[in-house]
Image (cartoon, rainbow, N blue to C red; front, side, top):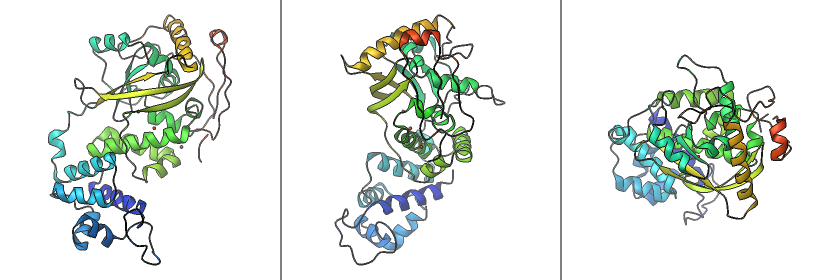
Amino acid sequence: MDNRAEVRDFLTTRRAKVSPEQAGLPQGGQRRVRGLRRSEVAALAGVSVEYYAKLERGALAGVSAPVLDGVARALRLDDAERTHLFALAQAADGTAALARPRRRSTNRWTARPSLQWTLESITAPAIVVSGRMDLLGANLLGRAMHSSLYESAAAAPESSLGAAPPNFARYTFLDSDAQRFYPQWDTAAAIAVAILRTTAGRDPHDKEMHDLVGELSTRSQHFRRLWATHDVRHHGSGTKHFHHTAVGELELAFESMAMVSEPGLNLTIYTADPGSATAERLRLLGSWAASQSAKAPVSSAGQQVDGQGAGPRARQSGHEPAEQAVVSQPNLAREERATPMVGGEDDVVEA
């Protein structure tokens, strides 16, 4: 990715988000652009207007940490945005490559046996995800929870490098089933794009990331709009809502942590409030997962080797999800006998 263009667009979009009132400045009459003027950012950051204008043109190479801190304060950047600004500066002067973990191709990555044993020992849904949002490993409940994602990947055509791993961003933007799985779909989409943008800032020369962003930009108008916002985020904890075809609505807290033994990968664990309806549905999901696992063996990477997931499901044609998908909530006994139909289409849409 073009570092200078990334810097320019990031700084201009952040400047447009800060009002004079938020920065403690007078309104100053009619304004031709949203947000702060360059001169106001320069004054707040303690640099000359000429120097800030140079930064906003993308010239971050060699800029000192105190200057970057001043710009971050002036633009009221949050922790994720500040980290992203520093990552762009490191990429500009080449120092990011020194600290970056070895880039891996997720098409060929598999969980080592001890990691898979660790995942299976966790009683809650647990998954291993890359910065490109590839789903690389899971325990039994993690596979069951994301069965639709595995099905979507299994149905996709293989490239010259072989079958691509399931990818949350592809599923969110290119599979019509995503709106059923994510009841808060707009939020999930915005989070997915922010995660990709954050990862791209840390490693702007990752070809697999380039290819993924190019594919999504070509095939999804909504992805293009969100990508242009340059939003970034730290996605370490929170609450997510899902709709599973077998057990219905799930409201799960999640904690995500970097894996020291696998740089660039994150382990995410989902939990339910004890005694809640979701906790009971997770128990049912475990029973459902065990019955599905008995039908098809699972590889060490967490993928059922014959490509089976939750069973066949109907999809609408087209690449982008529907504005609304209406799905029944079958109970466990009915799921054993028949798979409900789902459908969907976007264009109106995230660990």
